[in-house]
Length: 270
Image (cartoon, rainbow, N blue to C red; front, side):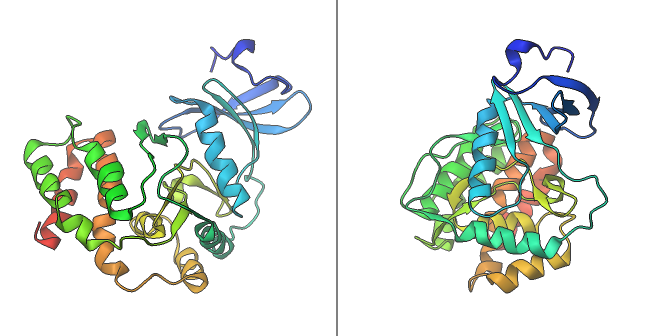
């Protein structure tokens, strides 16, 4: 991050004494650093306003999730407390219970007070009183104009959105605070959550993402379900709820996700 200058740095935060590149960072450029006051930090340069991510982290922290503290945000630069890496054992069960606590935090409607980001893609969060309408319009149809979506697949998804998909979903489940991008890559050392794409939504949207994610161990899922079991019919709804994630991946990674989306549609006969 050689282009990180004083004008980019969050005001009031001591400057960096030194930095070390960090691996990963598919969406953001990331480095580890130490401030001149000795605090260990992670610095991210984001392709979206950094306060969008800071907002999400502070929201799930207030709901009881363990996250790194937000130390500053300025422009596209986010500075976080550096957590993990000290040999502490993972506590996946505690993390599963913490996610259930986050889901217990509810809002009056589905959405969020601002749009945020799902990877490099804008996540649209306009408020809605009806869960099926929110999911169809903000989490499925919003992806369909993208040129990564082949025309035959777009037409099938439009037909699903026109009737059978919203009919599958409960009309007004609790509007839970959701992480929005909960997979193993957004967990540090089995203890801390990172990179949220928050919104108030049916918690089943997070559950479907978590269930489809490689790397989240059995003890995490078991602890969540002991705290708050899925509602009846969730297994039937889960593949449809994974359409959002699959469409995000299609837009990021290309056509190899087309067969997976088609398989979901085939499974419902859509």
